[in-house]
Amino acid sequence: MITPIERPDDRTLVLERVLDAPRTAVWRCWSEPDLLMRWHCPKPWQVTAAEMDLRPGGRFNTVMEGSDGERIENTGSFLQVEPGRHLTFTDAYSEGFVPSGSHFMTGFVTLEEAGEGRTRMSWGARHPSVETTRQHLEMGFEAGWNAATDQLEELAASLPRPLGADPLFRAKARTCLFLPHGALEAAEFYCGLLPDSGIDQVYRPDPNGPPLVVEFTLAGTPYMAMNGAPPSAPSHAVSISILTEDQGETDRLWHALCADGGEGGKCGWLRDRFGLHWQIVPKALPRLMHAGDPQAAGRVSAALMAMGKIDIAGLEAAFEASGSQTA
Image (cartoon, rainbow, N blue to C red; front, side, top):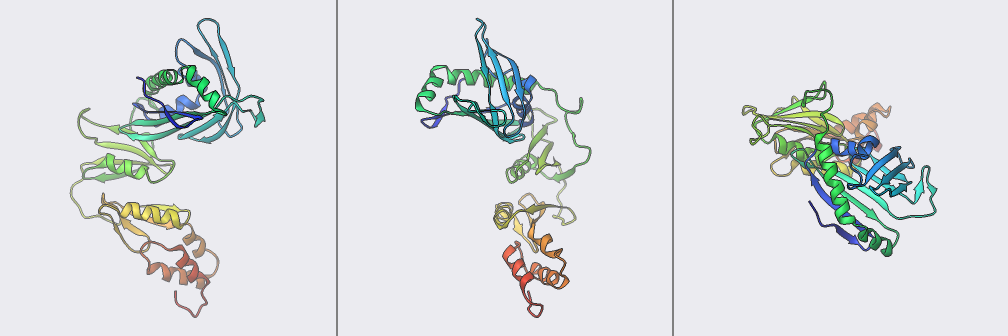
């Protein structure tokens, strides 16, 4: 299929596609040299060699050969590496950020969950000049990168699932969220809130029916969501606790999880619209509670008891207050 390219400016070309393959498999095709060689240039051209060191400054070298004996050696390095999600690479530098003396483009790829085990891929190139951009277009950027993406999609979809023949339950231990319905909707919503998150597998007993089990990763931690729970009142017995970096992240998660029928509680607790309980806890709270001052910790605890969404400034003010003051 040919998807039209996007041109956000006169030096940048971007191809955005939704691939019918899981993000973990697409990432493997970008990050493992033996897999990259199988798709990275459109046929009849082939990648005959690839070297990759996935770190900023690490090498990214390929050799491409055509059916008539053409040969193109590409020497470059990675600028940004976010495992599973993003790569930026360039031919402006070789390994170790050594200037190459010539520069054709800086490439980038971003992978995002698209639901239903699919991946949204944004693959683009930034060029040093308008003329270089024009040259890249005349070389067949749109058709060539679409063809390569077709090859990538086919390869990623064909990769065997990890950990043997069982396609589900990859983690030895994980938390199961048993919901009356909406397991996939909930998992996709949660994965959109935090980095290092994504849908891993979706299982449908009937291929044309609703999901039964959804495996997903939330902030690096494995979870499973399952449909079919009997009606029951929400319980605080199990909750998901998220440690936030600052007030901005605290506010963002609190408001997102309380939206559309969720409800805030006391001391950083809330219930989301799916009925699950969360604790949104800034890192400042354990830092202040364990600062070695029992009286200050008591004032912080008292201030916490009066809060719904945790306010870091309020905790710090209580910590700094004199012992005669109340929090």
